Image 1 (tube, rainbow, N blue to C red):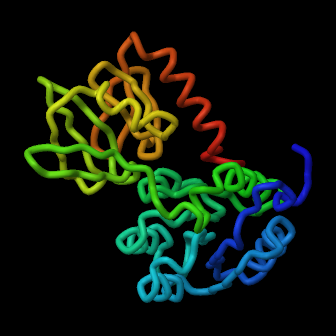
Image 2: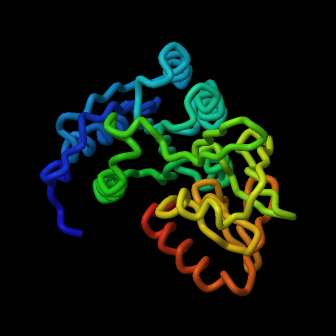
Image 3: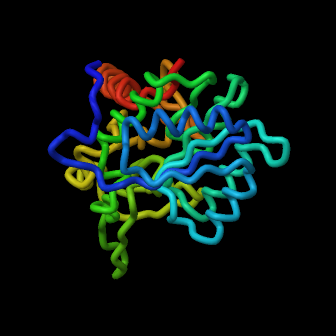
Length: 258
């Protein structure tokens, strides 16, 4: 990877607001130094206590676009803090930092963007921000409007954000949107009716009767995608393409950097 300031690209990112929450002041200082090399204009807030971060997010849920957080605090566990943050902000990027691998599964249950093992290196942080730069619309003020699925059903018009949907199923001419909060929204139709609205998004067609939101997956088995409380099947017809797209998705996101 060629090392250069990622802000030298033509499509510049607006200053990003970042919180670094780590009880180890040395680790926090090193991380801040790395971030400032990559994003000199970033607005960085350093916090030493997890409850400080939680209080700030409760008072103003949108003040940070990206959070670097240690997991093992003397007071609240970082995973619990992230769960509380998700109650007020489902979009903020959360990156965990820790010396242990034991929280890995829990971390992605709160939809962490990344899980970093300490000690941190410049290369690890560089990879993260190259990912952010290539997906700048997710973190920029220029695109607060998320992509949505729109449809009319029983005289009511629905607009559902992609980020709220875990997966979509179809049965007997009924399309079912399985929501992140556990609810299900129904409408008459077929999955193919929504292909244009899902094209180029995080949704992957894995079965004649299923679309899965890759951002909500916890992994892939031989026969399906592992979700929070279900395995969404992958049929033989879609298997090769599903594996290819999911592999590309994981490579791009680099879920676990060692």
